[in-house]
Image (cartoon, rainbow, N blue to C red; front, side, top):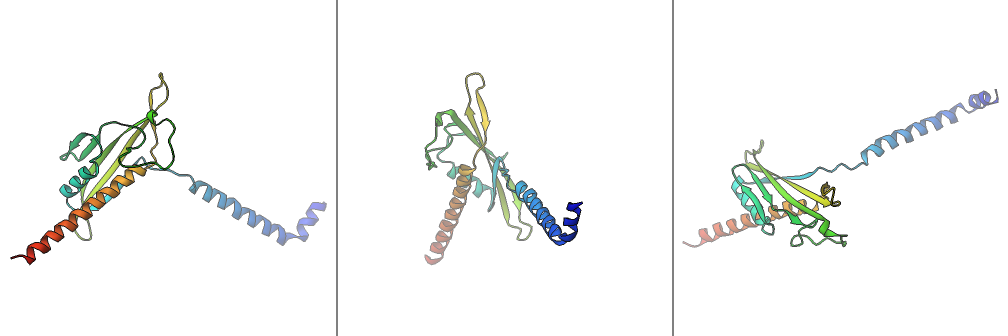
Length: 181
């Protein structure tokens, strides 16, 4: 009976406390679910340019990798298996890695021809998949290991830089040909 008298007297305080509690509970649910990181097993980027130009730019960006498959017609490039979690010629990881010999990976590039709806310019979608594996033990062998996506992003950035350089070189050559008779 004493409790019911307390609630009748401080009805506004109880209502305010309940609404604050409801807001806190909703924010925990919303932000708790949103903070879970789900990373895609691949990196994708669109490039403006012809399929041939983007293909050659990818091959130039992959110059430090041994290639296993390079099929332009099917739009696939695959590297040989590289030992370690990263290619040391491309990336020097900031922190020392424990037992890098327990890792190996290969990269797969998939290409798709597209056309921009607004400008009708040719586009090429390039998707990079890093198949990273970690050696567990003699009985289990090599198991799939998630990539952090860093090397894939670096390679896609390299492709864009190669395309930018090729464009600048062709513009420079066009200017020279216009100036000289």
